[in-house]
Length: 113
Length: 113
View (cartoon, rainbow over the protein chains, first blue to last red):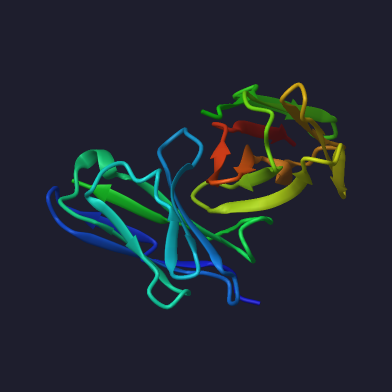
């Protein structure tokens, strides 16, 4: 079956702009995660959804970052007033209920100029 | 706060050798531990997941062990091949409200033909 997909694969934007990153999880997976990976580092947890609700958003770095999952499937990560330090690969993962293997998408590479 | 450390940061070995990658974590109260593989510019591929009650898991030439009480895991790769070249990431899941994976920085592995 289809895996986790993310769009766009690459995004270049200018400092101060708004961006949206999309994640399509594996069908039927109720748990969805966003992570951010900087060069040479392991992924860092941002936010976890169980169904439509954000069960844990403790990893979001500040209030410029926000994510939604209105119908319990597709999720969008939104970044306002982007800064150069936001440049990273944003990874999305899903799992059946949240207690099993997490399956990762290919990521969106965000570059803020 | 959970911290995950991976040693070595990089490793280069000739094809055919058996090798061990190490992972340690500071808080032994984990639910499971996963090993992932990441190829350059790609997302993460799950290799093995070990539940906290298990001591090891095997998949083909890969064997992962877990010593929860001492906060350690190892990934053993037998008869290494050039196709095994990648970055290997260790991640722990604590559950109980800490709902994201905590990753190490990874071991960059090169298998020389």
